[in-house]
Image 1 (cartoon, rainbow, N blue to C red):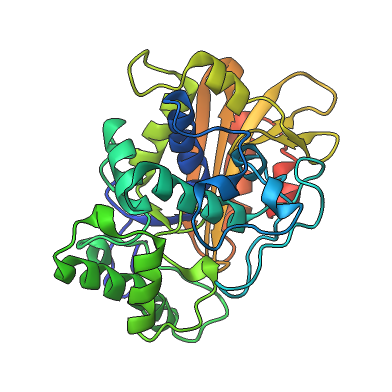
Image 2 (image 1 turned 30 degrees about the vertical axis):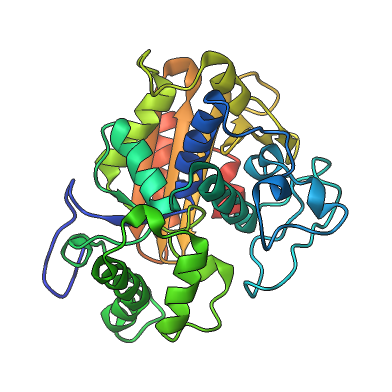
Length: 333
């Protein structure tokens, strides 16, 4: 069910909070900029920013490659927008999952392209034939949203609706401003959020947010995964060398897992050369989503859920579909 109060069932048109699955899509779009010669994977990100750039000795060496492979050393999220960037190790020498790094790269992409992140991603995904795609909000979102349900709330829908107040208010402010969506960069969004009374927003809560804010449908995201598994030899594919770089191990997690550029890798069974790609999403411990891709068979499976214990169901579905247990679930379960 998308909404238990109204009896609205999930359909192909239902919008799900895809959470961190937005990272994989943004990584693809950022690598398109690499192919276009606009983004250098190994240039320090501070070179692209005019303010609020990583300033420490280690932090100043963080690159797009480090961010996409979760080897920047940055924490998952800072607690305040004005908190300094702090890397826990020399970039490129370890693994530390970081949404903050993706948001930092988002700001760099805005500087490179001159347009806000929402406009950038809508344009890139529309080129791939996907229309129900936003890292902010949509005018029809309320009527299409898969509401979240949890064992821990007395009235889940009340709390769920309050969760969407900020994105809806921000979207309405942008619509009323008369400024094109492309003009809404990080700085403008931060100021607008303050006007809405959101004076202490942590970076994780800012929108649009490529690390955690994606709303999309199962059908649109599945089409994106199909593009990854079966390039169409058109202008919107990544170059073969770039795609190879995306899908090769860049940052080792453990003996059976690593990270490429924006996507997790695992070898199943352990010790084999059989590679699977994966990414999960988890917003507020309620919307739990998982994508598993199998390059050798050019197939993938995608599951969205909207309940606290959804990942238990997701794991059973993925095991049944792939015929394998996957170490990724020891991490995300």
